[in-house]
Image 1 (cartoon, rainbow, N blue to C red):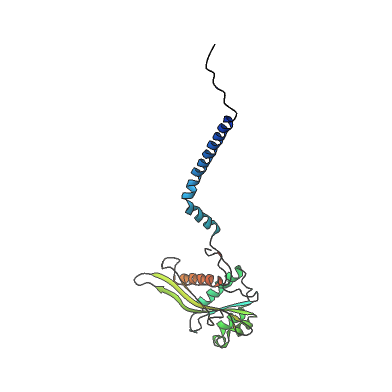
Image 2 (cartoon, rainbow, N blue to C red; image 1 turned 90 degrees about the horizontal axis):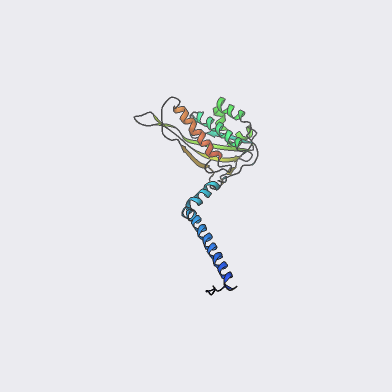
Length: 231
């Protein structure tokens, strides 16, 4: 029986077919990969933002690192000797807690100085900062000169806003020299205002003043240790 026989493929055509299949497979994988990458490319800013959020901003470095020697914390409104010492005493207490919590420096025995201030204010005023430091057995004094402390009440409504500012410096208790800041002998200036709060049970002039001193103590302590800016 006669018929038309199909011509067998030559050996060189079969590798070409396999090459075509491999090429098609490669193009398919490349296409899938590109499709997968499109959402990532479109959300590139979000991805970068997420990474930045995880890593976070860099630490804030201290402006000055005190020696690990006994430190006296001393706050006062030097310009007004008749001013109440409540704000200064609160600031001293809150600041001492912050310094100890972050290992800034060991705290000297302050009772002799604080007792002298309360019992003999006139004699206390005659003492220099370094003399008070030596009285406490301190090697250095963290001295805070308070200004503009107080609470202001809004007109027509019982709304409070606490306010305080200060000059901060570290003094050598042996020589009386300012250890920091060396470029501003009177001290490093800081200020703290509270948000406006309406008077209500538990919110009074005294509580607002206390909260301002606590926030100011946090600001002052952060001058001397490394911290995260969002902490």
